[in-house]
Image (cartoon, rainbow, N blue to C red):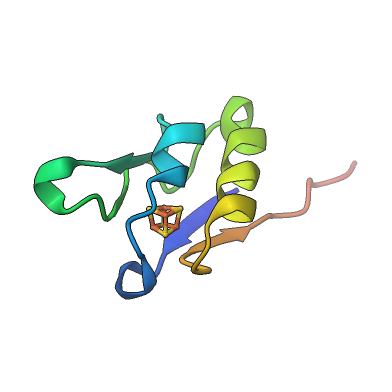
Length: 71
Ligand code: SF4
């Protein structure tokens, strides 16, 4: 999974850092805007990242899922 954020679209709702704290951070001193901590999160974080993308009210979070190689 590859994660990108289009920071200019962020409205600092804080949802992403709440549901996926290992991948996103919303620091008060940064106005609460998203900081991407891990653009290639491990599989254990994928569910949380997908939830963050779903909950993001501004479409800031983009996820690229690579197909799992077969054979
Ligand atoms: S959920 Fe979306 S709008 Fe809210 S802080 Fe995260 S990236 Fe920004």
